Image (cartoon, rainbow, N blue to C red; front, side):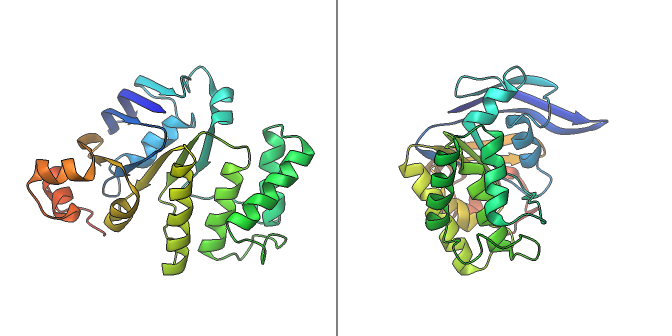
Length: 244
């Protein structure tokens, strides 16, 4: 579970995050929905201790990223926007490297790699170098790397970017399986169909602030709209960044 309270982050004179608060519960998928530049990625980077907040409080499974950075890395699985694969390594070597960093026993690590290879359908490319991989292949390796140590809480930053229809369907199926397994999943996105298909709760972020927070039905009721797309536009007070 994640609890964020009054989070702030500035870069010089630019206030990227201005008092964001929300919760992400276990066995739920929480969507961070907003236009590009709204503050979603900055918020995620503070959650996984890449950036220190200027103010506010974060608790992830009871831990504070500003004080418990190493413990946080054990309880978190992160799929960043950049994917960040080592292109000179094979997919298997990328995943194994992260398992080694987490101190996994060799037998357990190899078992986890085989399990993730089956689950994510990576057998055709698991022993190929990742240089030249398609977007779908890169995302699968990034997910496997994030999940190899069995984290409870999973952060995903726009994981479907660049995926084709079949890749997107496979990704959604896997994210739903994480929810069924009791994980807390935070999904940053600007794609309305993704929110409709996956999210139990939605945190709409605009201009570094929470514009609305609730279930999909609650957001529709609050906005008085019949579709999430229209609700999104009304709740952020603009049609900026509507990319669904």
